[in-house]
Length: 332
Ligand code: ACO
Image 1 (tube, rainbow, N blue to C red):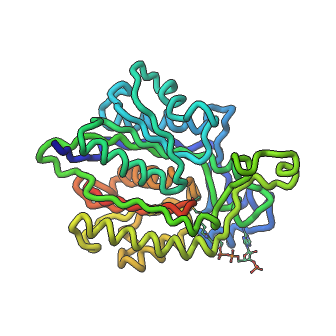
Image 2 (cartoon, helix red, strand yellow):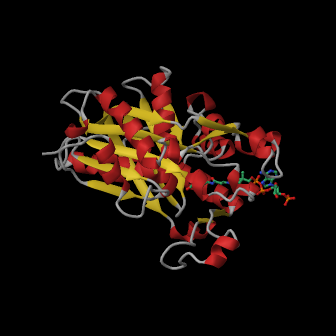
Image 3 (cartoon, protein in one colour):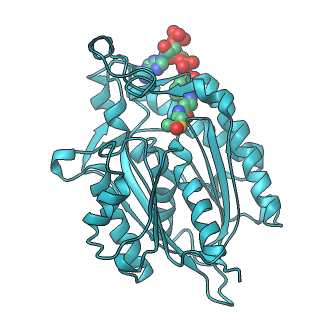
């Protein structure tokens, strides 16, 4: 028996603290004009872990929204897939902490994944496979990130780009005759681009040391231009493959919800795919790059704003450190 999968409900949480480009002008040698023209970002949110904004706190709040929208309770969830590159702790896994914060009284499997900015699309792909084959009925997929904790606030080429936040979605079985359905998805990892975005210090290969901390060597390092080229090619290739798998044409897509890394990457991807800007959901100006959280946050807001409606054909399109990438085609 095979089951169709649909998105039952979505949610988001954004930290209260806003950090504008003008605030960053006071930290590094940059300007609001440079940041906005090169990236499309005006401001981003910075979470306060002491103020109840740990990755798990944000995940629990976004998940509660998504569960309410799906008309389900935490104990209705059969599997949680949570993507983060900045977990609360190394152990236990963040899904376990989120289960506690959601007040779950039953046990269910939780999988932490870390394909960086592609995490939500990876999560949807895994969830859909389990739902289709009947293993699980309701799956909670979360992208929660506190990338501000991994930024070197002396490095203007990275600290301007990222922000914190969380997006979540509950996926479940689509009843017979329901028009909503995940139609196809594609996930990939091109290891040759692994060197373009990394945070190697502090792991098993290069454990923390006094020298690493003194040299500020434990932060995110990025080759922005190289990543830019890989990103545009990968985003358009995956989108074409997922659309073909769904037996659709590019022109059938009503909304593209791309990973929000840089407005120029988003525009280039739209151009390569022939998807006009009015069909592209963009909120990078408000939040910057929140990694695995960008797509579920943008998708949720577009639904809230009444742009994306039930029955619309939607394309999710992501890339991230690895270089991981993925695309999902769904009828919302
Ligand atoms: N303010 C002012 N000047 C700056 C800044 C800044 N914040 N940052 C860099 N510059 C300067 C550089 O020093 C350079 O000066 P020079 O010409 O005198 O040497 C000049 O601006 C141009 O620098 P580039 O790096 O070539 O600028 P570019 O146009 O490529 O934009 C950017 C940089 C925004 C980082 C872009 O390359 C980009 O967005 N790349 C993709 C990054 C990305 O997507 N990252 C997320 C990956 S997903 C994940 O998994 C987390």
